[in-house]
Each structure stands twice: as C-alpha cells, then as structure tokens.
Amino acid sequence: MVPDVSTGSRTRGLLSYLFGPGRRDEHTDPHIVAAFAMPGLPDPGRAPLDQHHDLLTELADYLDQPVRAREMRLGAKVPQHVWHCPVRTAPGDRYLTDAEWAEVARRVVHATGIAPDGDDKGCRWIAVRHADDHIHIMATSVREDGRRPRNKRDGQRAQAECRKIEKELGLRQLNSGDHTAAPMPTSAEQAKAQRTGHQQTAKEWLQEQAQAVAAAVRDEQEYFSTLTALGIQVRYRIGPESGDVIGYSLARPGDVNAQGEPVYFGGSKLSPDLSINRLRERLAAQQPTTPARGTVEPNRWRQAETTLRETARFAYQDQHHPDVPDVDAFDTVVQAQAAAFGELLHTAALTAPAHTRAELRAAATAFNRATRSKVRAEHQQAAALRTAAKQLLHTAGSGEDGATAAALLSTAVFVVIAIARWHQTRGHQQQAHAAQQSLVHLRTAYRQTAEPVIADLTRRTPTPKTTDRLAAQVHAAVPDHAQRILADPSWPALATALAQAESSGQPPRRALAEAAQQRELTTADRPAEVLLWRLRNATSDRIDQRTQAARARTGSRTTPTPAPTTPAVPTGTRAANDPTRRR
Image 1 (cartoon, rainbow, N blue to C red):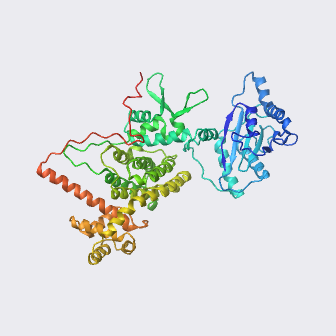
Image 2 (cartoon, rainbow, N blue to C red):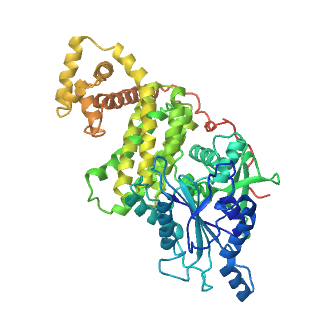
C-alpha cells in the first residue's frame, strides 16, 4: 500500500480532477467514501450531471472555510493549503470495499496529524474513490481553530501507518523506505511519456543516462561534456560569490513544456547520488594508472575480476563474523563497495560480449537502488574497484573474450549475493530487494557468456586416464568439496583447464588449492565452474608475467602506451568544450 503526500494551492482544481473523467478517461464512478463530516456533505460524484459543476464549487467553498477565516484574520494568503495523499494498493492485492477504504483514510489522516481521532478541531478532509485500487485523500490544511496542523514528516508517518494496515488487511507487505530512493515519476510524467511515444518518462531516461555516464567518466568536466554529446541539455547553478558550479539540471532532448521551454530536472531530483556534491565524491575516489612504458598492457577484465574478488571476500565475511570490530566503519566500506560495484555493472554492460549487454544493462538498472542507503559511503575505500570499473572502458581491452567476461560475471554474482545479505542484515529492505532483482539478470548474463566457453572446453576434455589422474588431484587439493566438484556438470571443462595449466608448468594440485583459497566454495551452486574461472585467470596471468619477463631479458622495445580511449558511453562521442567553465 503506497501513500504519496503532496501539497498545492487550488482546492477547486484538485476536486475537478478527482471527480472528473481523468486524463485518459480512466476514472470510474468517482464518489466520496469517507470525510470529516459525512452527513449533509455534497458529493459531486453521485449528483445529477446538471448539478455537478455547482456542487464542486460548493464543496470547495465548504472545505476552504477555515482557510478563508485565517486569511481574513492574518490579512495574507495561506500558502500551499491543499493537502493531497493518494493511497494505492500493490499490484495483485485483493479488492477493498468502500468501507475498508474509508477506514484506511481515517487512519491515514489520524497518523499524519491532519485530523487526529477525537479532535473536533482537526482539518476538513474527504477521501474520493474513482478506481478499484486507490483513493485520494484531500484536506485543507487549516484546522477549525484557525491553526495549521502539526503534520511534520507526514509522508513518513503515512508510510508507517500503511505498513500496519497491510498486515491487518492481509495485503502485500511492501518494503519500508529510507528516503534514499530516486523519486518516482508522477502520473503526469507517465501520461506525457505515453502521449509522446516514449517507453520511459523523461526523469527515468535522464537518470539512467546520467548513471551510466557517471560510471564511465574520469572527472566532472568529462561528465558534463559527455552528457552534452548525448544531446542532453545541461543547466548549471553558479555560486554567486565563488562563480563555481554548485548544482546542475538536465533536460531530455525534445522534452518541453507548454511554452516550448526545456523541462529540467535537478541532479539530486533524478537520484540522491547524482547531486553535484555526491557526484564529486564518487569521481574523486579513483586511482587512474598508466602502464609503465615498455610493459605489457594488462587484461583489464582480469584485473577487474581480481579486484572484485577482494570486494566479495570483504563483504561476505560479515555473514560469518557478526562480531566484526567497529561495525560502523565496516558498513561504510561495504556501502562504498556497493556503489562502486554498481558502476562496474554499467561499464561492463557497455563492453561485455554483445549478446549479454541487454541483461547486464537490466542488472545495472535494478542494482542502482542497492547502491544507496542511510549508511554514508567511504568512497575512498572502494577506489580500486571504481578505478577497475572505469579501466574497462579506457583501455583497449574488451570483454569479447568470453572466458574473461564469464570469470568476472561469476564473481559478480557472488558480490551481489554478499551485498544483498549485508543489506538484509542491516534492515535495508528495498536495497536487498533491488539486489535480488539484479541477481536474476546477472545470472542470465553469466550463463549466456559462460555456456559457450564451457561447451568448448568440454569438447576438449583430456583422455579418461588423464581425467582420472586429475580427479585424484582434486581429492588431494580440496577434499571437503571433491565430491561436489566431480559431480558438477562443468567438471569436464575444469579437467581441460587443469590439463592446460599443467602444460604451462602449473602443478594441478597447487593450482587447485590456490584457486580454492580465493573464495569459499560452500555457497557455490557449481563449485567446478568457480574453480574453472579462477584457474584460467591465474594461468593467463602467469603467461602475461612470462611475456613481460622475456621482454625484460631481451630488452626489446615496445610501442608507446596508447592514450586512453574515449569512454564507451551510449553514443560513443564526446563534446570537446568544457561546459563547467563560466564564461
């Protein structure tokens, strides 16, 4: 059950909407189900059509009487005197009767301080139903005694009351909010998107684009120039004394109001972590590195997987060691890692194998909600992961190598599980739910990437004699998990990887033991797959090290390290100008 408190200044205008046909003729049988004084109260919804207009005016005047009395006494207009709170049941909930909705309305106005039970001097209010799944509670926020109501934090109080009502009425119990979620699009914004043929509202589209760009760029200037290159209009808020940018707003290409002017949304209104201050914190927390001249350019996907593995190990330890000293400091690091991991999902979605990108974009979008909570992130503690995420875009390497991409996505699945559990233990219900939604898409992307690689390795399984010998090495290296590993459908592929490692000079037993130590295997659904990706990454790293050593011995010259490439933002273009410079 979702309440949504807002205020306005036009009593008659809101009544016309509530008792009217709706923007798309969606209102059916508008009528009052509850009010501060039901007997004798005019109900325009149940009156003859020729009386409808007059009754709307009569009802508005009746509700506004305390407002007009206060204005006469003070000699000034009462600002924002219309209090409005739609309350909607969740999709799939049962049908509520008018009597049940009336009780919901009475409890909401009581909980919010608009009209407390037993208080004859409370505000005048009505509850209108014009659809099966919701009502609109409307009040004029001046009490009968001329005072304004004590309704501070009314939105939070309405949410808390609805959580109680859900349990009592047997409705779907929604997760409690913590005011870190991105603002939901309004019904007007949704209607506009439908009229203009867009699948997303302007607010949703801008949020998605801004999050992807923030994950890709290296500094504030690049952030704004990339947004401009995407056709997004940027408006800056300049400090009157310093002349610096202290805020910004974005407008979707072609999104204009009735006067033909761009419709701007502030960064913080798109998402709390897109405010200029939060954005600067994130962009500052990175460690740009350039390979030394003459060195082999590392595989950034393998580097990202290694960094991500450390993140998983840190985040997951809290599940087994609840008495971690200085829990608050621990939480600030995990929150920072969650934010940096969200950026990695966005960058991976741009450069992963093409057939997985749609699922990775969906995973990144869903995980956005899991990157914010009441815990303040210590972003510098996740600088390595954030840097690794950006290097996926700013180097020549790509995720088209299915094996390295699968290894990273395998570890990413484990990271999401660890972060979801951390959110759950901290009571972050919305964030935990978002992580679980992201996990569904991420697992699909992983399977899309991993299955062709595993199938190819399976086709090249060594002889039965060699496979049996390698199975004995599994028993010796990881005895506690050997049976599960050998029963895993991916065991033949792991046997191939072990044979390849052995050919490169790695003893299978030692390679297995080292791979097993990189993360616990108890929670792995397919332990052979987990070991497979660890093993292949380790083998590839050894090959890179040998190549580097050979170059050092021969003193061979390498070509200069190429300049970092443009980040792979959706359009693949950048603006050259610095939009943050005040002219």
